[in-house]
Length: 243
Image 1: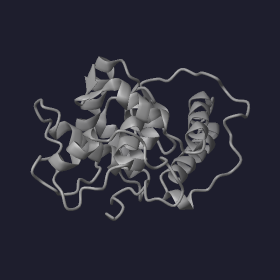
Image 2: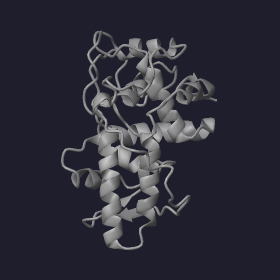
Image 3: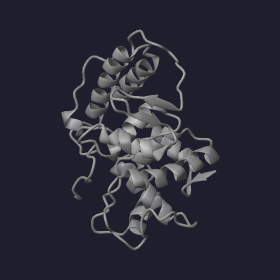
């Protein structure tokens, strides 16, 4: 079953090459600890650790801190995840309620959509994903060149840069969840495949979204390691400069 006009197996192959050196494993471990907290004080401490780990994850690659990994430490192997969580400070964040995602962002001054969606993906990894500029660009380019109806993410003839926002996240999330379900591909695998796919393609500057999508479709293999320190892969708002 194609995913945005690309065979799902090809997306999975790109996702298999994704690597961040283990930082996401620590975030997943910390998220379990948040869900497993049995009192407000413990949850406040664990939430703080999770937010700081997410902030580190979304820094520029060369500036990421890499402490001793947590993922191998004792901790809950599995916990129940409710469809909502009340975070320290009293904000109720609900898995399927977009208004609460904005409220989550507002509790973290300086956080944009990429950091906010990273927290959502940590809390509900089967229902949320990270929307940074790479994933958004990949979806936009593939959408306008899929041969089917466009979902309004970008205009095929435009070359305007798209800023990751929570409004765009809602549109992209609906599309990717549908595509992931139809292709029987985990949502996280879809996100990572699109991220890696975009790494071998020059940015949108100087071309249209249709041309960018065609370049993505011509992508045959990985030419650069994903998540390499020193590359501007984790910028929240702007893409790296075109070569």
